[in-house]
Amino acid sequence: MNILIAGAGGIGGYFGGRLMEKGQKVTFLVRENRKEQLRNTGLVIKSPHGDFTGTPQLITKDDQGQTYDVILITTKAYHLDQVIEDIKPFVNESTLILPLLNGIAHLDPLVDTFGDQVIGGLCFIETTLDAEGHVIQSSPVHELVYGERDGHKTDRIIALEQAFEGANAGFRQSENIMQDMWHKYSFITAMSGITTLMRSPIGPTVQIPSARHTLDRLLQEISSVMKAIGAPIADNLPEMQMIRMEEMNEEMKSSMLRDMEKGLQTETSHLQGWLLEKGQAEKIGTPILEAAYAHVKIYESLNADR
Image (cartoon, rainbow, N blue to C red; front, side):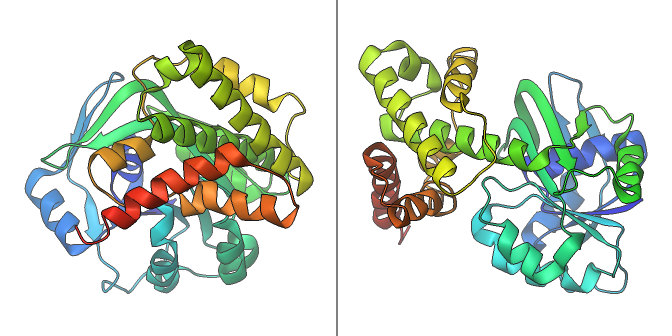
């Protein structure tokens, strides 16, 4: 398959690099500054699963002329509107759109634009770019999950499975991708909410009783809202998520906390904010969720001019 990856940051650079390493045809849609950086350094991955350096095929939004079999969207949620416009010239009637954004809110605008060409997707990975633009994977998990939104295993999903097969990463096809996405949304909203609210890695938040109690209340609030709006989540989701957080490396930070530490924009409107609006519409009290959201929004307002 001819694959276009929108973004070459920690997520797009990592999974795209693993597909390049396999020998798959991959092109990265990037901005001019990232294009120049990658031309100078190549795509470099530093990982517990083995390092990789390659010369990537790069285009910008102005380099139109061909379409692709599948487009992976790996940018931050706050760039979604621009990314939709940027990829339109590279989409034909059979192009698959595979978004790897956090949350759920991005699905509606993508489906409104591209219809049934949009499939479900998510990833679990902890990566960042260093000062040289190298992709640094800081924990061993590197899973990308995808599937038809209706759960069917179609010919196009089988073709995508074949394209991903053999890459040095956990590419996994799911027949229950929507529940997977909602569960990931619950996890990342709680994880980013509690670590930013406490300005702490996950370890102390599950070890200190008062912090753990706050996290438990946040998990319960998130699940209550999701159930009220008909999300396909497990009944014991809060307990599942707490166990998972207990099993994580104590030093693990959410990407939102890392963004705050760097003075960068965050995805809180897409994660906590979207769910907070749904809870308010359902008249469900979510004081911990609201406090987490307010905390990050205050940070954003204080850093708006930086």
